Image (cartoon, rainbow over all chains, first blue to last red; front, side, top):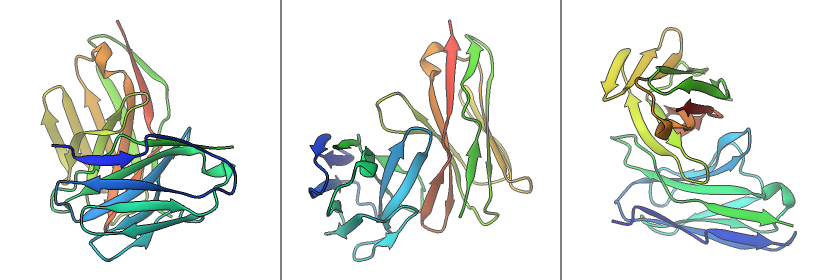
Amino acid sequence: NAGVTQTPKFQVLKTGQSMTLQCAQDMNHNSMYWYRQDPGMGLRLIYYSASEGTTDKGEVPNGYNVSRLNKREFSLRLESAAPSQTSVYFCASTRLNTGELFFGEGSRLTVL
Amino acid sequence: QKEVEQNSGPLSVPEGAIASLNCTYSDRGSQSFFWYRQYSGKSPELIMFIYSNGDKEDGRFTAQLNKASQYVSLLIRDSQPSDSATYLCAVTSGNQFYFGTGTSLTVIP
């Protein structure tokens, strides 16, 4: 049982480059989330998708876009990467009636 | 802005002692409360959740919730070196999960 799978695990970008972080879950969860984690800042919500076909902004959405491709997949795109987007990104999912968030292993992104 | 506050620590306790971790939250409408453990370089993993006022025990862990005071805590009894990690408090409001910045715990053998 894979749970939540994120790719890539590591990525180095130059300022202005674009990239997409992929996330897929095999637990038939309705809701999916993208967080970033920075030292001293905790986990901050970028975007979430409460159900297939819907997406909403979280606390720090600027510079990001998302796509809920289907129930399994939720991607995060950086159109023009900036050094301030250097962070560890976590995808998570939940079936709301239990409330537990299941996390992927994280994607470490460095923007030079 | 919904806020979740934790003492960042570091908190150090000797092996076998009780570790007490605290969390306050700003949104009175918060519905569910979670404690996650995160080892360095790893993703968060759920330790406990609590929905109702009072205590909830699971092995060496006890979660305590006081909605009137907007306070949730985690007690770890008989602390072990393997408990050394960062502990994240999370609360839900609607479909969103809000996290504190975490408390770093070190258990000294």
